[in-house]
View (spheres, helix red, strand yellow):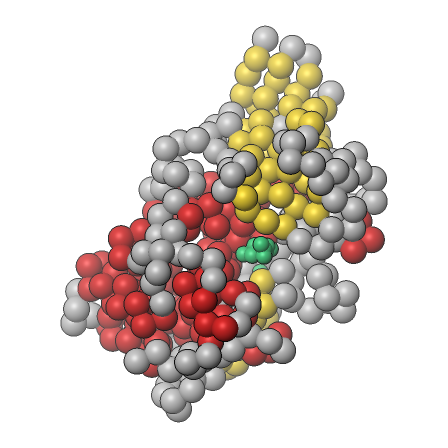
Length: 335
Ligand code: ASN
Ligand code: ZN
Ligand code: CA
């Protein structure tokens, strides 16, 4: 007998959650039957290109909710499965997009990749997301914003196809950060409330600080707050800065603000004051720009044009939304 089930997951970063599972005979496996059949596999510290072993369980209650250095631990799988599930739901319910290719078919996820591997990545060739266990193998890179970030690389690849170098690479990275953040807000999970920080849960720096800051990207010590002619020479995770900053300013505006207990203070490079239009409209504008107007070679100037076209199509060329898109790009020196 085989059927769609809803299991209980004890995650590391998002508390106790429900996760889609499948019953096969008397055993459950981590296949989400309601979201394109997304599966979560165990790499058990291997770096081979295989998918790994599909997670199975006897009672459909997965993980312990606490960090474990065991390579068979289910907890990291719960977070990865939950992240893929929430990201699927976010794209479906926010944009009507059914999976990465909008064809109803899911990617898959692999956890416990490598030994003390401090990264997570999307790979077009396997159509899959892969997560390391972090330094010490006890901080898996499976938080909600990271899952949303990685799955979004698949979406970008299958829409604008932004080349992963130079300014287009920075825009590709920013797109993943933007929707990673949007996924985290969408989840509305009490254990991981929405913020404009990337990777605040995974302790990647060992001191509790996040990987990136969208209100003021330069807080990470490497990303840029504003565009300059040398931006495209930087690593794509740093040239993403001005677009992340644009997204924050468009959503929330400039100056000081506290959201879900996190304080932000977003500057503008031209001394302007911006009033945000809200995250819900900002994500609609970015998504339409990504899927209708950007191409593989879109640079920052092109992103300004694409988002203005998107704002015009969605809200009209004389709307406040359109004017705020223009003002937010100017505030990060994209004119
Ligand atoms: N975590 C990184 C990213 O998603 C992986 C990489 O640099 N390829 O951008
Ligand atoms: Zn990325
Ligand atoms: Ca976050």
